[in-house]
Image (cartoon, rainbow, N blue to C red; front, side, top):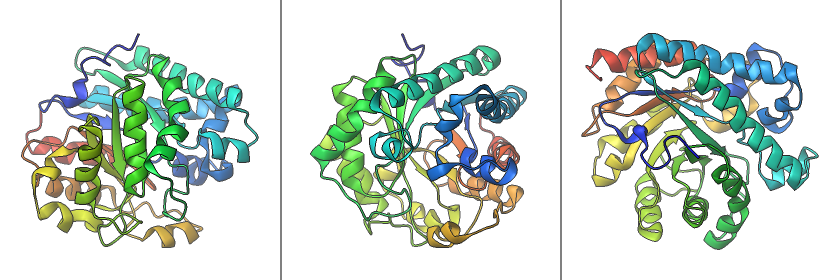
Length: 319
């Protein structure tokens, strides 16, 4: 049974949790690994690939213990759903096994790094059915619920503490994920990505995404996050304020200020400025009535960025 599923420490406003940096971009650009379809879960097929992923989380675990923060570990299963699995040659049974192996890896990480001052929460990562940068293939709410339920059911049968829907580009898919999680009695958070104008790739506003998802699911999501965009892309959106902003508990931003289209074409990693990114987070934290609970990075970031983000937030007096 999950250690924290019935009482998520991620909801404690007095504790800071660190989340991972950009696993896939680190593997591709720093380790020189070829990741077909950006699917890091494929590395779990052998010991050498598993070690690479363990080393990524070891660096984050060591930082969390050193800074005396909590730690949210997310499985490397962003692409481990049916359509992407088929492209990668995985049967449904093999996908189920890959998702379970990913949770087992993080359970070993929890045993290694957890202390009374560093609680470790395990999130089962769910990615979009489509690209993650575009909203060109959309499902209805019902179709999204049915599509994502298989992966959520797998996580619900493991010791994962919650599921996390990441890089969501339109509202109906987020609603479907939340409804599937509710049917499985599995806690879930939902994380939207936005373009340089602060809107979802679908053109929908972040406010509408959160308010409509809550309205159609009975506010089932434990919280919302933003990921895969630079803070300058959504700063003015958060600055406008409103009750919906307070449903956001964390950020995993890109290091680069480039648009998704520019990043898609980039042949060289844009890892930005870790110190500047930390200062950007500190400024955004001021828009929330309570401090952000979860901070980490997305594309182009690694443990250097997460450390600077952590230091900037802790300088503000976060517990």
